[in-house]
Structures are given as C-alpha cells and as structure tokens.
Image 1 (cartoon, helix red, strand yellow):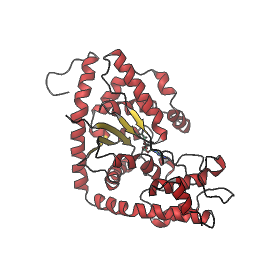
Image 2 (cartoon, helix red, strand yellow):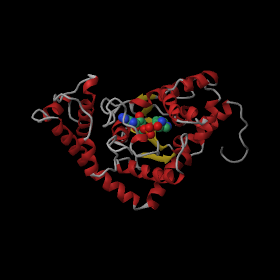
Image 3 (spheres, protein in one colour):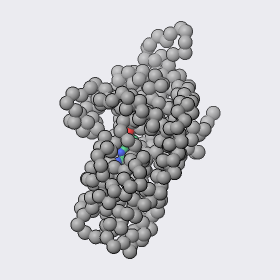
Image 4 (tube, protein in one colour):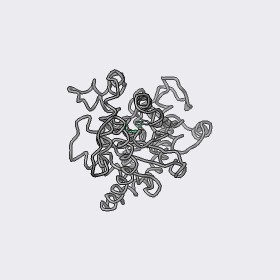
Length: 340
Ligand code: TYM
C-alpha cells in the first residue's frame, strides 16, 4: 500500500498551451512527481462543452499529451491519460449530477463568463465543474495543483464530496485541496495586463506566449507587451504597474530567483525595452529543449499511443472500483457479469 499523497489535475486540449498553463500548473505537476502518486489528464470531454473543430481537437489532444511529456511528465512516475479513454469519468459525473444543486453551478464565475460569450449555451457548459469533480473524486485525490482561476472549481468539488458523504457514507470521498503556486498562479495577457492569459485568446498575436512559439515570435510578443508610462522596474501591486509586475513575475517563475535578485538583474536596465528583452531571452532559452523533445515525441505517434493506452489502463484500475462503490451506495443493481 502506498502512503504517498495522491494528486489529480487536468488540462484542456482546446487551443494552444501557453506559459500561464505551464507556470500555473504543469510546472508543479512535474516538480511533485517523486513524492506524490500522480494522475494527469488531458480533459477532452471538458473541451467539447464549447464548439470545437473535430479534426483540430483530435490533433490538439495528442499534441497536448506530447507537450506534457516534453515538459517533464514521466510516464514511469505518473499516469498520463486522455479523459474520454476512461469512461467512468462521464458516468461518475452523472451520479454526482444527481446530488449537486443547480444553484451551485449557476454561481460559477467561469460559467457566467463563458456563457456570456456564447450565442447558445449547452448543458455541458453548466455541468462542466461536476465533470471536474468526478475527475478528482474518483481518484481519491488529496491535492489538485492548479492555477488561481481553477480554485473555485476545486472548492465546488469539495462541496460536492461533502454532500455525497453526508447523504451516503461519511468519509467515502477524500476532500481535495487546491494547490496554487506562490509564483505564476495567474499570468496576465501581454497585450492586456488586466486580464488573465487565456488559451482561447492564445491565437491572438501578442496576447500569450505559446510553448511552441519560435524565438522570433516570443521576442516580438514580449517587445510589444503593454507596460506603463513610467520607468521603474520593481514588483508592485499598483494596478498601473500590472504590466511590469507580470513581466517580472514571468522572469521570477522561469528563473526561480527571489524578488530581490530579479530586481537586481534589471538594476542597470535602460528602460522597459531592456526588461522585455531580458524576460524574452530567459523564456526562449527555457523553451528550446522542451520544443525539441515535443517534436521528437510527435515524430513517433506509436510510442505516444502506447503511453496513453497504459495511462488509461492505470487510471481505470483506480477509478472503476470507486465508481462501482458509488453505484452500490446509490442503490443501483450491478451487472452480474463484467466488472462494472
Ligand atoms: P485549463 O485547461 O484552462 O488550464 C490548465 C491549467 O492552467 C492554469 N492556468 C493558468 N495559470 C496561470 N496563469 C494563467 N493565465 C492560467 N491560465 C490557465 C489553470 O488554472 C489550470 O490549472 N477545468 C480545468 C481542467 C480540469 C481539471 C480537472 C483541473 C478538468 N478536470 C480536474 C484539475 C482537476 C481547465 O480548464 O484548465
């Protein structure tokens, strides 16, 4: 029996993975691999809660899995899988739907934001956080490493777990904790430091740094980054200096330096131009080896499929029995044959 803490986290394959996703979440997934038992999931069922091009989604699902491996997820230490390959996620979502009050979902900030942008809103968009709760709870995860924007969804998963436990069996579900990094939990758009860097805007030039951007594009995005009319290069929570603060935060998260050391690195800068180039350079150097590994993985699709097939098997071995227990508790008759 393992005594390691169990970790679950997920990332959507819609759009291009960007530096915010990496620094806010994936970096922590990689860092915790040795001391935790990890499940990392490419959540394709979450992506289809808004319209997707099927060909593009299929490509992005595999590309994201390759990118996670390139970023350091080691399949010998962690289980990496595609959500739709393990069908109990969708079933678990249904069971949890039946104990989740509608009002809890209508209050979710992300639902309100996303539904305001859609002409027609599918039920899946409202149900999105219940599927996320199923992801987490079916694995008895203690910790959920995410960026700041996912905190509310993890808190909802806690509420749903508590409600289920109260109705059916105390302590059946582990109550999961969101794990938010001290630096990089909320990267802002380079073109607008008042709004978070977002995957759905990652195709807009100058908004985000995508992990696959080439050095020229990265330099161009940073050079165009919105700052302020001053010239002081220091960390600050003054909304006026949000742009400079964001750039320093990126530099800090990538280099792992302290605030004082980061500011010292720019003490002789001649202005924001030097800051932008300095940040771009560390990001370019950091991404180069990752991009090379990504390419090698994409050139070997059979190996990628093999890793994902093993991941799905390992994931199902944990989540299927949990779903079976849920069904029994809820009064469903389990089939005589088969293990589900
Ligand atoms: P997703 O795909 O939007 O984002 C993946 C991770 O990246 C973090 N993130 C950011 N961090 C810092 N700065 C930003 N600008 C930024 N933008 C995104 C997110 O917080 C997230 O950790 N619903 C989830 C996926 C999910 C999930 C789960 C997560 C599905 N099931 C179970 C945890 C556990 C999502 O859409 O993430």
